[in-house]
Length: 334
Image (cartoon, rainbow, N blue to C red; front, side, top):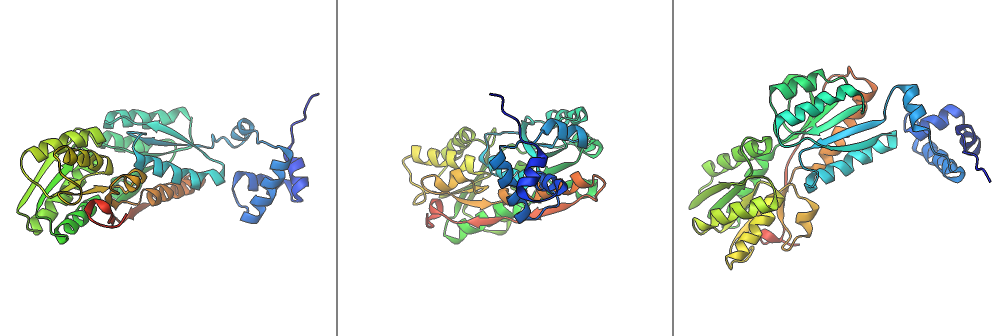
């Protein structure tokens, strides 16, 4: 027995609305939530699936947006991806996750590949930037939104955060709970996050008195890199607090503290940054500076929707502020 594929007209008749309204509701454009729910229920009853290829050809759009990051295993990017999907999916867009690599050159090549027309836009969070990358973003044939360093003077839409201020908040918190020998674990200084977080630590320790303030640069922003850097830092002398430039470095640092027979937070208090789900469920739960990963992802997706409708729309720059979340690793509640 041959099954007949349901048509858009049949969905419209089942929902009791016009063909145009049905199309708008299924594609997430110009339809009320009640209309969307009504039409999608009718589509589900009939087993209707949109002809994505035909739709793309008619509208000359792929209905795909790339989300490009250096490390797809980093939990902060996973949270951003979820938020981007939540905003774009109701409008008919799929999110294609891509890796940029850890150099500005590899990111530049990926942005240049947008000329092939495989996506309608890109949300990118580069680890490193240079003038070539910025020029490619400016000249890209489709909209590009940057999550990271603010580029308001370059005519590029971006969603940034004050990670330097976040590190300052962590340092002040540790001083307030009586810690006076502080260490800082940062990632590579030639990266956007590494440079900004270094500025935050330097500024905070210039204005707050510590008996000892030391630091170590990790090879990367990973757990294993944090473990190695914390081992080197702790070997140079006793510390009672560690500030890590992200949650993964902080988790590596906690292991290094335990290797020396010390406990967290009794002997050494530890803070992270990014407030990831991994840090929240880790034992002890991690005091961390939230940089609004979910909020930044949503903001970037909303900007992308606006640019998809009007590519000539004026660039937008949004800043999401940091927030310190105190948990067990510095003596707070779980």
